[in-house]
Amino acid sequence: MSEKPSYPSSSSFTSGAEAAWCCASVGQFIVIAPDSDRYSIRWSAIGDGTDWPTLDSADARTKQSSNQLFPPKYGTVTGIAGTDFNAFIFQERAIWSMTYQGGDVVFSFDRFEEGRGCHRVNRFVAVDEAVFFESQYGYHVVQGNEVTDIGYGIVDKSFTPT
Image (cartoon, rainbow, N blue to C red):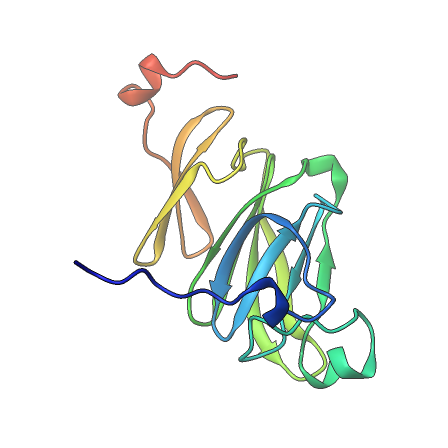
C-alpha cells in the first residue's frame, strides 16, 4: 500500500496566495490564472511555490514574483502549459509564449496566434515540446510558436463546437 503524497497546508502559504482556475509549473515558479481576474496570470516567488508576495512590492521584485494582464478581446485565460524555461498561455482566441528572462523583466510575453486558442479551460495536453489543444475550430498542435491543424477532415468531422 503506497502512502499518500503530502501537500502544503493552507497555513504554509503567504497571505498573497489566491484561488486559481488553472495553473502550471514553469521552471522554478508556479503560475496561476487567478479566480479574481480571469484575464491575467500571476506567478509565485522564484523557487518557492508557497510564497506569494504582495504584487509590485519590494519583496515581490526581489523574489521575481509578478503578474501579467492579457487583452480581454481574446477572451479569458484558459490554460497554462509550462516547461523548464517557458510556457504557452492560452486565451479563448489567442496563444502567447511566456519566456523566462530573469531580472526585473522576469518573463517576456509574445502573442503568436490570434483567432485560435484553447476555447475551454484546460482542454489541452502537453507531450514533450508539443501542446495539443481544442479550439472553437477543431484540434491543433502548437510547437515552437507555430500552430498546425491536426483534425481537419479526420477527427474534426465529428467535432461540434460549443
